[in-house]
Image (cartoon, rainbow, N blue to C red; front, side, top):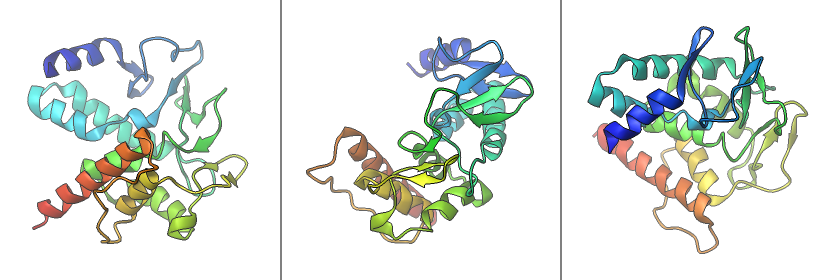
Length: 205
């Protein structure tokens, strides 16, 4: 099954565009005449590392290296955050995607989760740490519009809070218990953050 997934992704979703190796969010609808539309929350670094370790196909390593560079270029707004959807033009310039809210929000919150899961730290996590450190934990806005510098009037869900806690690495254990009011997405983020924190703690023992 892993071979089939890898082959399908490499044949249909991973392409070269300008100086970059990119993964498209899907087969259709993301390649335009003058740009690509990307979703950086699909940069699933831990899976790509495993694919490379399993297959030794250099395309996976190229995708990892290129995507790390891409994230550094998706530095929008005061905190240098990526948006949920990002356009990459023919000149190699990144911008919040046309036709989508210019928000660091419910999709992009997965980016630091996957970075931490892959054992990536340092400056790559800095924009997320900078942004989330500005707010008290339980009153952290659910999203920020990086162009208008406006924030949501409601706070992060429990799952998004778990990603925040994992990213800030404040040493407080993330609970493995799902709240009764958590929806599927929040619960998924919550449990993945719990899993990653435990994996990271075991790796340093």
